[in-house]
Amino acid sequence: MKKGKIYKPKPKCIDCGKDISKRAKRCMVCANKLSAQKRDYTKNNNPFYGKKHKDKSKKQISLSKTGIKGRKHSKETIEKIRKWNIGKSVSSKTKLKISENHADVSGNKNPRWNGGSSLEVYPSIFNKILKALIRERDNHICQECGKTEQENGRKLAVHHIDYKKKNCNEDNLISLCHSCHNKTNTDRPYWQKRLTKPVSFEDVITDVQRWRKNEVR
Image (cartoon, rainbow, N blue to C red; front, side, top):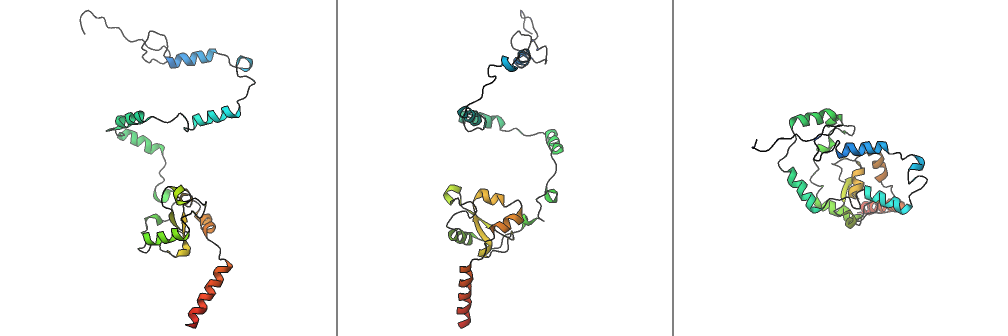
């Protein structure tokens, strides 16, 4: 302790005990809580009593709370957050708390478990050439929602309708956008039935014509 200076303890909030910078009885949080309790905003004491928000005001409020308008971090703030998190890791104690508070849904404990089918390897025939042919056949359009490949922002996914990776028949493959392809991960029987295209009368005629040509030969 330096000579000539008298150590004075920092004042603390009388409600929560936190250190306060100024000589006040309460911190800002506790002071606001107390003032809110003293205020009476019921019925006629509320300046907004009996009034309603206009549709324009409702839209502005919803936009401000959904992050579309005025709720995004600036590039400088993002950079500060990134630098602040460098080198920091979660302690083993915190990891244990997280594991205790979250149920184990890995492997066969997951309700979406399908016998480990995601670990199966795709056959060599399911390659870039086959995928390109399927996308070309479907005119580079999602066959569920009609979204184009440009609107999708990436190449369309080629999906196996019956979820069997080894079945790479063209009738079993379909082009889907990213969002529609994600939907097919749930309720597989529904999506298999929905994406299975019924055989048209024209297809039957073409198949019969092909069969007759082969028989003549």
